[in-house]
Amino acid sequence: MAEKKSTADKARETINERIIDPAKKAGEAMRASGAKMAENSSTIGAKMIDQAEANAREAFAAMRAAAAAKDLSEVMKIQGDFLRDQGSRSMSQAREIGELIMQFGRDAVAPLRGGKG
Image (cartoon, rainbow, N blue to C red; front, top):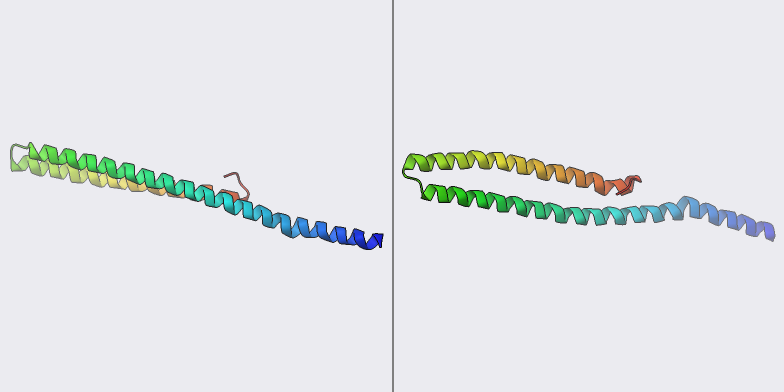
């Protein structure tokens, strides 16, 4: 009877080592990944709000300058400068958000790959 119990104990250990422990680790990694994704989503949202605020500030500055312009050619120059700068700002902001998303993606996947997240 002692031999059967020993065999059963070995079977339990094997099941724990090969099935239960890896499943627990995978669950923990998924939770860590999900928590990281939620945290990063919040960071991206805040960054987008900061960018929108900067864009609005620049737009109002351009409108103030246009309102104070002496003639139509000055208004056209102000508008052209604003549009050029806004295009550049938009590209830079899109790049910044893209880089954040890529980094956050790597951070979220790291726990699933066994890395530190």
